[in-house]
Length: 171
Length: 291
Image 1: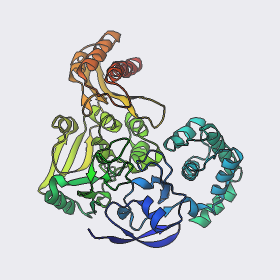
Image 2: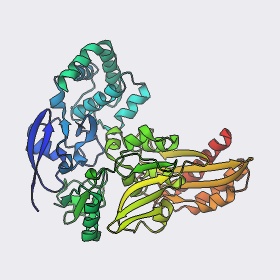
Image 3: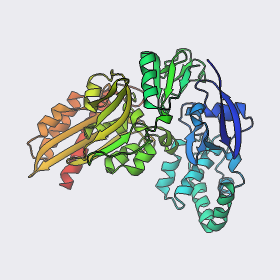
Image 4: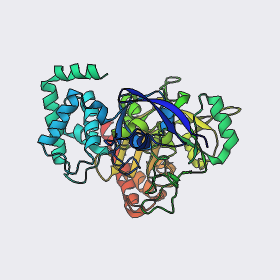
C-alpha cells in the first residue's frame, strides 16, 4: 500500500494532501487540514448530512467521498463561506429563529440551505422539507429550522443585490 | 485499508477487472460502498462488520481492491436510436433534472436527500441491495438494456436478464439504454415518510392500450424479492383484457402472490405483500383514469 499525494483546492487555497486507499474527504478535512470542524463526524453512512460540503458548488456528503478521486476539484466547507453575505443571512436567521440547539447539525443544515437558496431563492414549504430531508437534527425538531429557512429566503430576496455582490467576491 | 484504483480509460478499467476478478469492488458514487459502521472504516467499508454493533453493512473488505469509475467519463446522457441512454456514472440529481420520462424523474427524486443524489449514480442504483434501488424498478418497467465493457469488447444484456441471472456476469457497466416508452409509465413508492424514505415497496408499470384493450404490459416491483423483478403473472392477466377495476384487481392479486418480499427493519414480509397489491392497483388505476 502506497500513500498518494494529491492537490485539492479547499476553501480557495490549494492544499497538498496525503491519502491512503479509501481515505475520505471528511477525514482529510477534519484530521489532516485541521480545524475544519464545521465538517462533523456524524454517522459515516451518508444518513445524517452533518458532514456536508460543497464540491465544485454541489452539495456532497464528505464521509462517503474517497478523496483520491477529487484531485484538482474545489471543496468549500462552511469555514470557507463565512465571508459570504448569503451565509451570514442564513446564520442570522438560524439564530433569530432558535433553529440551533446543540449545534452539531447546524453547519450541514446551513450549507444545505445555501445550496437550496442558490438554486431556488423562493422555495415553498414542501421544497424546504425536501431539501432538508437528508439532514437530521436530534434537538430542535424541524419546525424552527424550516422557519429559519423561510426567514433566510425572505432576507436574501430583500437584499439580493448585496448577496450577489458577495457571491462574486467569493468565487 | 483497501487499495483504491482510479483508471483513466475503459481499457485500463477492464484490465483491472480481468486482473483482480472477484477481489475487486467497483465504486461509483460510493453512497453504499463507502458506508461504514462504528469502527469508522477500520475493519472495512460497507462490509459485514461483525466487530461493530448496530446496523451490519455489506461490500468492501480492507484487503480488497477498489476501483473508482470517476475518471472514465461515464456521467453523460447520450440517447441512441430515439430512445434514452444514460452513462452508468450519471448522478441521480442529473437524472432527476434531465430524464424525459416523469416516472424516471420521480424515482430519482425518491432516493435519499439532495446531497446523496448528487453523488449516487444510475449504474450504482442497479446494483443496490433490496429494498433500495428505486430507479432500477422504473428501468425494468422500461425494459432497459445494460452495456458492459470487458477486456475483449462490449456485451449487452437486458436488465431483466441481468437480474434473472443473479447479476453474476463480470465486466464494467458503462451504459443503460431503453427505447422510448411504448405506453404510459407510472412509478409509485410506498415509503415511511414523504421525502428521503427507505422503501417499503416500489411499483413501476408501463402499459400500452390499443382500442381500450391492453396491448403490452410491463409491471416491475422493488422491495418485493431478492432484486427488482418483473411480474409476468400479472402482466399475462392484463394483456388482451380491458383495463378496468376487475382486471386491475386480478393483476394486483397476482403480483402479491408472485412476489417474495423480505422482512427487515423497514417493513415485514406480510406488510410488503399487501402494499404490492395496493400499489399495483393504484398504479394501474392511474393509467385507467388517464385513458
